[in-house]
Length: 300
Image (cartoon, rainbow, N blue to C red; front, top):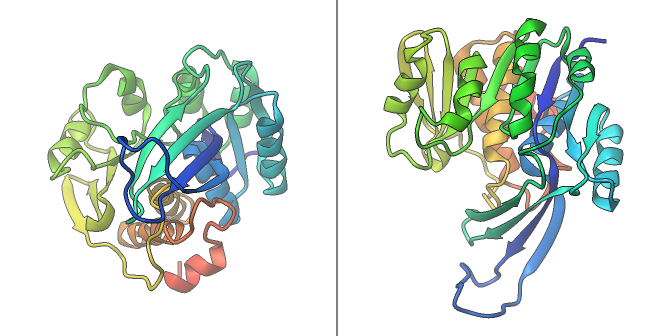
């Protein structure tokens, strides 16, 4: 059956390394830490995020034929996420190591295994994409081969460019051109407005959302750029992993799947992101539809 959303991207096991006395020093050979493993990476956070909000979700990606890959496959199935197009990477399940700072920031070390050379089954992928309302694309190299099928599906296509620096970068160009809605982290930009304008230059209809961390976010839409302050919540920020994915899930579920106004979609996105940051090394407790509606009342 057609899905509300199909997530296309990498998923894997993340290991977060927490330093009880603050930031780590690369000059010190060893340290006592708290090390936590969980299902993460952009594909993991977004697929599980939509499922927690109650949307019918399918996932297209790769895991290894190993204990970690089997664990991920079983967990996605328990979440109600379709895994017909969860393929096998012979190099194994992708991994990330996140060195976590005292304020929740991270230094990431990513091992995407063989995502640069994988060749997905295009017919199977197209059958999963067909009829979807929303296709949420991430950036593994193999995913660009699915962009034509994504366009043929008639779905709204969203793509998260992550911490982009150059809007003309060759690797991301296919994704930028195919997307109706773009997300990016503004960590490399004091002011994301010039980058938003660059992305909209070729297509003024393109919606662009820039995550600005503790500064909130910016929305480029209908020829204007608006800044939104961060939402206030009582929970403490302990881990910023998955925050950008939460912003995208909250905004897209509101604006595309529920047709709510952009202002409310932004509020939903920031709320999902902020809630995600209140959990340490965890994608099991992402916000539910009931929790989100309680924090962002909406009569749509």
